[in-house]
Image 1 (tube, rainbow over the protein chains, first blue to last red):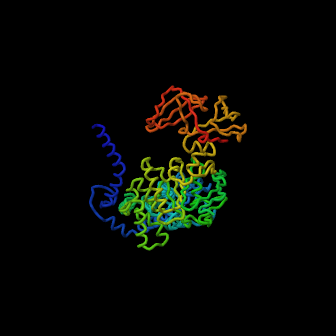
Image 2 (image 1 turned 60 degrees about the vertical axis):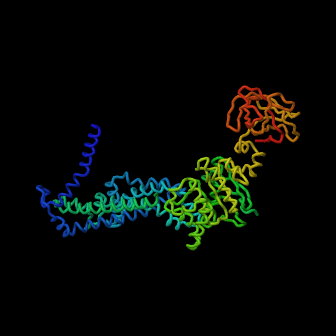
Image 3 (image 1 turned 90 degrees about the horizontal axis):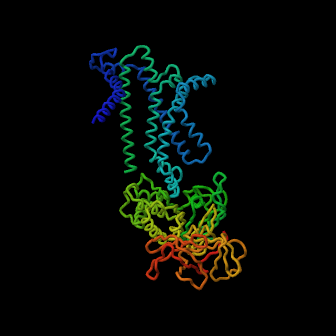
Length: 261
Length: 352
């Protein structure tokens, strides 16, 4: 009984620690006060101001745009690479397999700095594509891990079965591999999206002047005086992400049920 | 040329020769088992025929045409995998229809063919189930139906029954053989299970280290193995290694001597030979007989029900003898002194 009680207290402490700050942020976005101070007075003022704050909206859109392209590239790259890796006997396999995961261990700070140095050396200007490349490098390992795990759980002989029944490689991918891999592609893409969306350090190094992403915008607005608009935009994004997660989980559950009922 | 002809087929993986210039031919409708321990090259042979690997040397002919340059999806070969490899996201009906769709059958024809195939494997009414909802034996049947419905020119079975439990396996063996005969399809069955190979096959090719050691009917392989590997791989056997002297005397490596059964041994020289005798071919007497015999003592008895296995100590060797437990014979007991012998026609004299 006592043990159960202690476990409960622990759980509560941990969850409070995890979610209380977020709850406070969401609450404060509906607070009238300019300085996040109490007493609480309900208001949608900051959401109205947000709607008029073009900088914040623009940087949010840039972030979503970068994250979406990153996710798309990561899914395509990871799927192609892993499909090749699981069936190849090439000696390169071992190297590519580890090189692709390696960025996980490189601090983003160092990665950002080194890309910047390289640009300097080549005498190139910072541009949007370089930013994208950076984001893809850091997000790809996550997508790869999710897709690889799924591929390894599949019986590779189903591809051979498909071939023996008369289907060429493309048909086999379309009718067998893709449907079975789809839930993992979705999950891997979402992970890449979140990693990219969240990233501050790399974007800070690589963003072309005159543009900014949401994390950069939030960072600089804290420096120059915080307004609860930041609370509002964060709440909007949290709500957006939650809806996406619910959507993805539903789709994955449905497709898994469809596969394995 | 025979229906399926394999000529000089070789394959290496990373400088490791796994298939060493094998040759064989079988006629249409034959059920051939490739039998051997793991790593003997049997699965590689199958994968080369299916087109999943490409040979370094040699050719494969089916019905007089070579298929060497065709990709797997153009070979029209039916395959049943050890894991069945059913498509998990498709129903039983869709699994079976898959090969027909690739061949551009009309919807109506597909429906007809699928229900015919399901009837053949006794799974009518299972069209809309998912593979996960089927037992191992049923999945096996779906895999067989899926492979046969495309009317392949050859059926390849890769250890296809190994995943089933023993009783189901025996049932499936009989069913598989019946269907194979009905359809009349030339079949290549890869297995390490000698009993399965014996039960199913018209012909068995025993393989070892990338070579075919012996290829013949099950009866001939059992009766006349070419060497001790085949004799011990197919069934059990006693091996006595030594030299044949005059007067049909056989001198074992440990020096003990006995008389071989009456036969002309003049063909054999002074080299070492291995005498191979099956446990069930040995005759036991409890009184000393007049014909050539060996004396021994019962060391161990294993009772199997209809049979008993005896381990006999004789000539410094352990000899296995198997006897029917019928009403004409008393069971032997440990420490019984016995006299045993065999007919010349039941012994194989091997060189290796």
